[in-house]
Image (tube, rainbow, N blue to C red; front, top):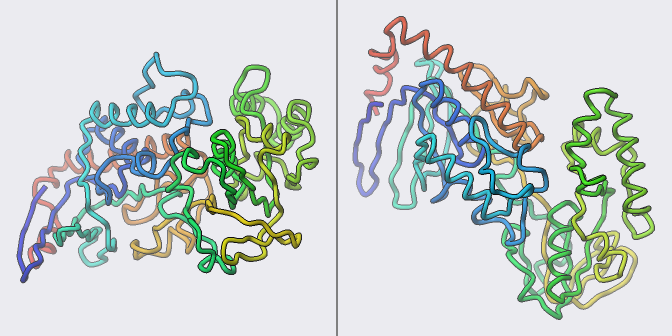
Length: 416
């Protein structure tokens, strides 16, 4: 790695040549590809805008969060969970696992560096990744490869709801929600009925709040376990033998026997099955861990949609009005790739690769993507292995030809 420095006024700048890839993002995806590259003997640099690894898990999740899938489906490549961890590790345990993972593979990200832009230099045939730090320090990383590991959930989504700014009470996104303890005795509207919305509503009810959950669209609710086995594990097993549409039918029949007809409680099921919906639209089914029982008992109220907010009040599309204290927006996240990656051939405007799984991990000119499969940590692990093998093949060939000692593009960075 070669470094060139300069100063202009109060701004310090560095230009860094990276012999291997630049990885943007130090979440599970970035760590996974870093570990696989380490196994291939390929050097790399990981850039992270926060001050820690897995910042989404460490700073933007609620306290009671656990992995919704068994740990064997959530472990990263080449490093299993500790044996003493439970089947569904807690948030703290998962963070501990990721810290052990980074230490084991000697992954040391460049923290507090936010990518401002990343662009392929056609003349020099390299990627130029420009970052800035809170202290005003700027760095330009130059590399033959760029790995986008910022994932599907980089930025919160905040909907534009009429009157929300005039509401006057507390309005937070689910990423800022930690516990329902401070909401005891309060009326809280939770906007969104995915896994986060359901679990936040459950947590609020457990702490003595009166939550109302807004379920504007249809949603699949499945038990987390069926006959003592993970529903996800059961689905993966069945898919080895029967087509996806039939697996969906079986899951919905079993869910009806275990949970009953959820439409009796104001929840509408989609017209297509849960696995097909996940594959086509990336919408994950809710794995119930107790919220449905709260809904049945009336401790969590289901409402079909919001018409508008006013001072201290919400009006639902049914015409009903309710005085409330707080609003939690469990309205999901989105990719931030379009804001900094100056490229439109591989990534679409929504920040996801245009190609479909399993061919959405590799673009042109040394561009790669990890964590955009909508298949969770297992999908990211598969991406990491593919990316590391692909880069490793080229890197080792370059070493054999002794081209790495004098990079052919160094003349392009001397002008920084």
